[in-house]
Image 1 (tube, rainbow, N blue to C red):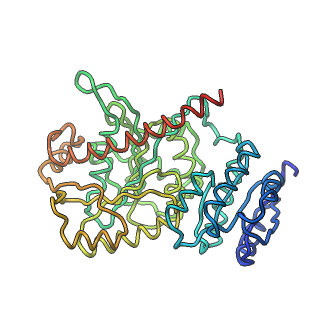
Image 2: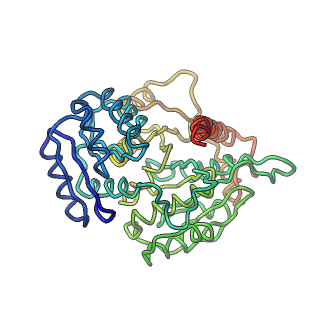
Length: 410
């Protein structure tokens, strides 16, 4: 292979899959497509040679997930981790089988119903993942690889901004005299370009940086990411929404992807407030997120809207872990029947509950400070602290699991 060409091999018995990849690849200069009419679990040693000879492997998953995961691991071992692998799966494929593939080393899993645009974006993402190609201006030395947490809402007024602001504040885990020493650096990014209110919750002025990013069309570097943030409290840095209203589609996926990548290098946690709308650039947000918190009420309209959003998010990132946060309700001792039905509709348990505490929420919002400063002992503040502890433990577990691998490499 020449350095200026890229090759893709499609392993699938379905000619429609090969045709889709070929139609997408023709718009990417220098990219060739090879077809292999088989299943990944059936070609054994041939897969190893294909991994060595091609830049990207795309295969149709589902025939034998365990065997496919084993084949992926073997290809990665054979290429010293250099193989780039993308899987296409049926939307009904069990989550456990999807986890097998992602844990084995598949870069991304797309639904087989993915559009040409979605396929093109996934191919670009995988091909750009060739090592060692960090984003411009990002140093891999001393990388934090911050945990990305997205916060969404099923309907207006659900309390997503309250959760995002105070979750980010709790994740800093400030200690010491007057709570001035932060254990973690946390970035809070308000991507609701049109109606974001994170800044007002923390008494910060609107920030034009996202508006300039959308209007001028440049891809941000690490300097932009660093200089666009405003310090709201020790350890807590915020990129507020602009005062100007910008069309959601003005932002491009590659801009958002680069911005999040730079923030991950600089912060231990990146909390992202999402708009209650759909845009193309949501895909890189969801792909980068380790956790999505869906804030919703338990009413029928709220649950219905949450279901619609979750379906979209699942199509954009099938491996995304989503937790349901029920707002303005205390967790009942005995689960009510309508809660059971709502949970069944969402196909997810109600993991977190935020009690209705209007006095505490209003005290914090009116003063432009987090709950920790206005009503630290309130029920709402305690509930958000419990949620933050779960995320911190998740991040520590991930870091602990990575340490042995780093030590072996050294």
